[in-house]
Length: 221
Length: 257
Image (cartoon, rainbow over all chains, first blue to last red; front, side, top):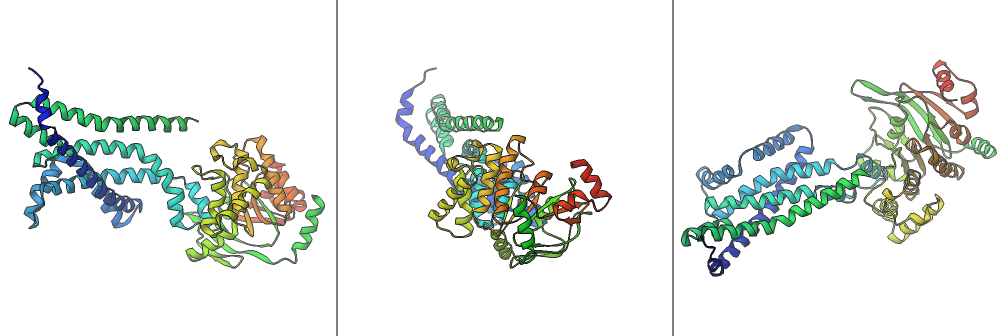
């Protein structure tokens, strides 16, 4: 078997286009997932009442079902239940947003819960308005502590976009498999995108590893 | 120090009442932590609250700025009432400083930012003025050279002095200290007590929950004894430490003296 680089040279614009679609979907689902996740997070932080129960059910549900099922469901079942049809990409973004929101809600909640009660009380005791306490006392350390989890989740999300090839979204994995079937150069295209995924995701893993080591070092003091 | 105390003590009789506590009660579930406490504190009073652990001292002092909501009764502090609306409670807290056992400094902010946050965010003091206050107060508590460090870089005693400066930057009328030296290594207790002692000498109205009996005896105008959620003794320090009022008080004194 020979590795014919020529296939890649001829078709790289399509692969890069696919990468662009992958990143675009990631950005969109991350944005929508963050908004939904924040809502779910604060509902769950209530600790009781129906918003709390709804949030718990929502988070458990979307963290439990496989992403592929969610993607197929949004793409195939939603149009049957409601009389509108989303494009494949929009369906994919919606499905991944729901998936992201459930995970992000838990990450946000853990970060906020890690805020120091004592520091919040000290700020309250100074008569600092609650809004300022959130912005200056609770959020900055919470965000720093949730960064590793957020970045790990971002890697998961990037990987999950490849599942959208199953509903025909022209992201990177889809482009590679289509090009592969056209040219029979599967090895070339699939290896190429494997490398591209690696190059995209590995720096994120490195960041997470480095930050976790730093946090562990700090805790050790 | 002895002389100045007697002097302020006699003057205290004429100063206005700044804290008035009316029969407050507080429960955690079925456990009643504060079982009907009433008292009055006058301007410039230095009151130490002592008693066995779990007797309600810390809970009591934390009700005075609304950090612990009360179930029954009423507290009047300066021109404010507890329980009250959130805005009123915020106003009250700006006039009543609090220092905690565990310092509770904002670890992600520098010493300067710890001190200037309250004045700028709550009192709308200008940044320049807040900075000037921070530097002046840090000099006063003896750590003027630490202004750009982070709390994590300071010793416990220095952190507690920053916490005191942070509270004083609000220019409060009343200061509450909740076991300010209990979390400190023994060699750092003195430096913090000295700062509190200076503050008392300056005429600040203060309530101090403490286990430091020497400090209470020396600095306080009044000493409260709290046990089982009841404020059972309210006396000047000589009387408090010399003539126990009941068995509980006597048992406590025999343990701590």
